[in-house]
Image (tube, rainbow, N blue to C red; front, top):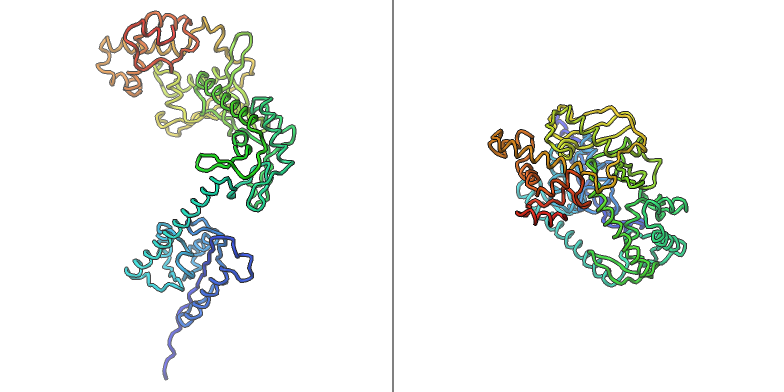
Amino acid sequence: MASSSPKNPALRCAIYTRKSTEHGLELEFNSLDAQREACEAYIKSQASLGWKVLPQPYDDPAFSGGNLERPALKKLLKDIEAGKVDVVVVYKIDRLTRSLADFAKLVEAFDARSISFVAVTQQFNTTTSMGRLTLNVLLSFAQFERELSSERVRDKVAASRRKGKWTGGTVPLGYEARDKKLVINPTEAETVRTIFRRYIELQSFGRLVADLDKRGIVTKRRNTKVKKFNGGIPFTYGPLAHFLKNRIYVGETGHGGKWYPGEHKAIVDQKTFDKVQGLLKSGIHKRMIKRSESGALLMGKLFDDRGNAMSPSFSSKNGARYRFYVSSAILRGRKAEAGSVARVSATNTEQRLINALRQRLKIDQAVMDADVIGSYVARADLSSRAVKISTTPAAKIRSNQLSIPWQVCQPSSATIIEANSECQPSAKLVQAIVRAHAWLRDLQSDKFDTVEALAASVELHPKLVRQELRHAFLAPAVTKAILTGGQPSALSLARIPKTLPLTWLEQCRALGF
């Protein structure tokens, strides 16, 4: 009696389909349906080998093949990892990907699970070297086609922008997109003019943010599938600065950093726009000067306990200047978002951290305060009870974390750092001169044979030590003025040139004496 032939084991086939654009998806029978039908027909033709279609659809409508960021593809790979798929079937290779690099990753994932891969309109066998070569050649042409199409689109967009046409993208506040053109929305346009007018009147982002909040003015509202792009949120500094610089509002379109006359109508007149740009540039320049002269050692490193950066600020009263660190939430007009400590004395905070670091890390007193912060502090988080310091690798401590007990002083107790600046010495300049003379004395007394040996003893780079030694060779008149506070108000460490003039007279002139 003849024995029956053994049945082939069932092979679970996952059909993957993709379409690059939304065009035609609204049709009852679209490209994705056509791809799936062709793949199902092929799988049925292999029924004798045990091939069986999985009911789970893996469809990516309106997704590019240039990357792997596709929901259905991610679902497919996840199911492959879970062992739910034996064969991946596509209409053409470029439906899976148009990138050689991405395809190499997919093949590696398939091989790891012994997954077969079939393109129903392109016959090849990936188990042979010739089959893999054929596949790579096909993918090379698919990638070339994608890149060629991208270049054509970029060239078309550039040409359209030069002609002033709207080519899509995020529609700015004040306009609506109709028939591929920007059309003024009268209500929103009045809001735009209000923002420009109020900035000219207030000349401050902080006051403008508060004013817009009071008026209930928010960013443009949109209806999108992704909630975070729906808009309708209060303005903050970044979006507001971008808004005020946007030349679309004077009737121009931009591309590649250049602007061209646009087809759409302007909302803001050129005179108003130019005045705003002048104020913005002036404000940026003033902020840069204030920051560079603030001497804020913890700038960019200090945060409150809600993650807001603490920015340097100051106030003046009766000829005295007080330094502070203020939560950026306060500066943005978002007081409710600030941490438990919104404002602290800068000098007090810096000295507490520096003293604690010197004590715990055994740092030489010759190392300047700025170098202590710069070399050993990566980040400092301030709360009402402690300062948590994240140290740099240079600190050489096991956990890279230090906690310093803290009691917040009232803002009124801020340290005066500049009162009658004509007779107050600069602590930084004095410290630099004292340290340079101490180092010079050590070298002259043969305590250290070389600058390299001196640098190693203070744990600084030799180049930095050589630069700092120049402060020991300042003209006597300059040194005396710095020690007594009689130096020009503009003089700071950063303004002392790295290469000093040889004669003392030229030094005095160069340093503003």
